[in-house]
Length: 177
Image (cartoon, rainbow, N blue to C red; front, side, top):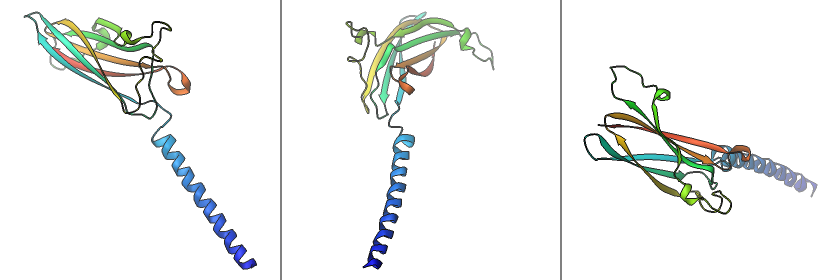
């Protein structure tokens, strides 16, 4: 009988070790690889131009916000901001465009402002991007022709690492002729 107890004890210890190893691998996969506790948003910017006349065009932006993470995403008080800079096209070959010197024509325009809760002045119960969801927003502006425009979209998240505000930006460039 003692022989069987010893064999059973060995199997129990081996099973415990295997269980601990598998549990560790599972925890690593969930929290490090899949980052189940971290927000993860993809921003896609597409644009459409409608020429109005020889000097002006209408620039329509479609901004898609796709939550590819495992936690819901709520914008902070700054929402989702669009900024647009322009650079004249009087450029020579190999000129480097310094966007910091570009003309700022739109600065931090919150395209989610229409969703803000007027009672508590935030988005906590009015604009929540659930995991797997895609939200599409639009922005339009009349711009001058013969310019290069840089579009910056910044989503400001309410809860980032350590529950502090966080943000992510995406850029796009378009030439309007």
